Image (cartoon, rainbow, N blue to C red; front, side, top):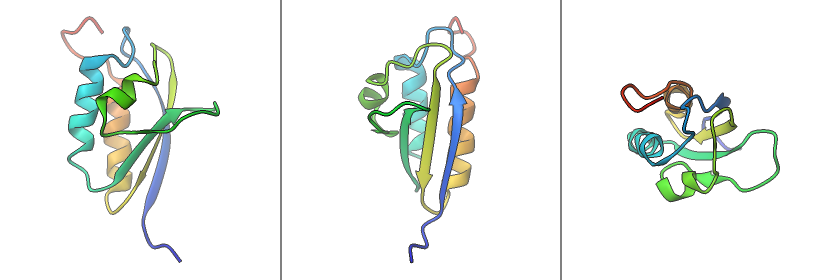
Length: 98
């Protein structure tokens, strides 16, 4: 049996310009602080799942304002990772036109 903790959540991109380079960079910087492996995909759509520690992979999702994304983390701090990363997606960036 696998004892690795896993957590999943769905969040809406709230930055008016979508998940562009700056919020993707913030997401990756925060994701790198967690031990958990982070995966991101469009919620409710079949398609690719990308590495949450790669800016280019996140940008490939082309997540515009209002896009629902599914975050999945597995590892010791998976629950904290999903909660913290979900906040980045759902809060506009101060002073960045969001």
